[in-house]
Length: 268
Image (cartoon, rainbow, N blue to C red; front, side):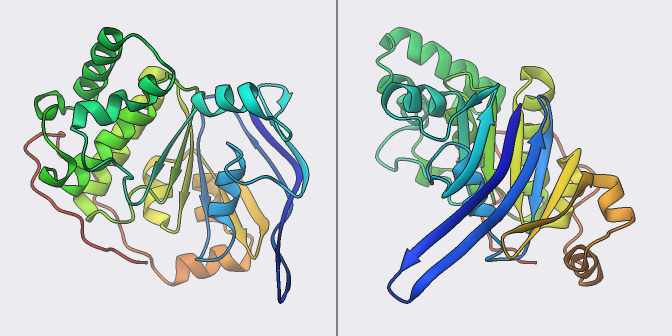
């Protein structure tokens, strides 16, 4: 379980202080696929980066599995980050490493045995239907395939949690659904709790069981995704619905390693 209690984040700059997050209170239960949705600049990416201390809160507590992680350093911090996978919009793969070597990287950092690393990486590539691409380089893959490599790499250390920061924003709609279906499969089969940062209502509708709406650094609404969309209580949630964000396909085709879609910017 992840709990945020009165969490705030202030950035100090020469032209004054900027409060990016203000008194955030959230509870993310084990097994959730929890969406955090908001407009650009609302604070959602800052919020997700607090959960593995890529950013540190200015005030408040972040509690994971009963432990306050706010002041973790050194070994505690390394172990925390090993337990929390993260995937990004731009994939963040090493271009000079093969697909297999990219997935092995987190295990190499932990100095696990090389043969064991390769076995684990192949296992994960099979999970994401890319084992036949193990010797390829990222530049030889489509956008959807690269994101699936990033997902496999994020799972290398067998994390309990996965943070997805706009992980499908650079993908076309069909590939987006394929990646979301893969994340749902991982959640169901491996029990990985997921936090999904997005600006897309379609993403939340497709995958998230609970959703929080963030606006100007405040959580303005939170609940079951179906309830948030059926009866929005906040102005920003109503506006998101009124503006009619893109609609994702109803279902996806099975994931294939021969996928040919390349990333194209989609906006909402």
